Length: 151
Image 1 (cartoon, one colour):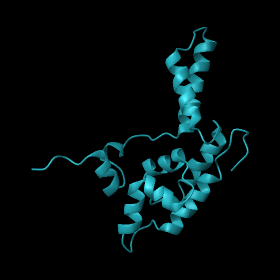
Image 2 (cartoon, one colour; image 1 turned 30 degrees about the vertical axis):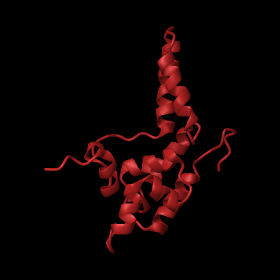
Image 3 (spheres, rainbow, N blue to C red; image 1 turned 135 degrees about the vertical axis):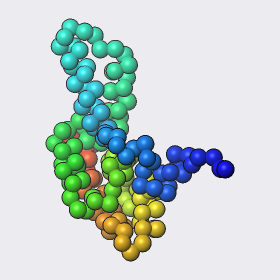
């Protein structure tokens, strides 16, 4: 028999690997909020947060396109419950947000399962280029630059 499919192969041919079916996916912004809360709680308790926590927060903040804004996270999470987002696995939504995809071709290149759904989904597919474009616009409306201004 052949070897089991790699994660890369699974991503290209399925909505997401089975390992992600029951996992809670987090946006970089959500991770930054959690880490900041952990650091603050430790400081409030008189403890010095370890370098590993500060380093993780520094790293995730570099890729936090919503500047730790819970309202922006809520807007994306709420939008993701609408019919436009029905065809996305949570894994795909999180990747769209975390990677900051600007256009349909970029999203399909960086997230192969989107390309597979659009190109091979058939007439019953809920995802097409127009719907993906709408999703990208919704997500982009919640991104910020360092000065806090929306993109």
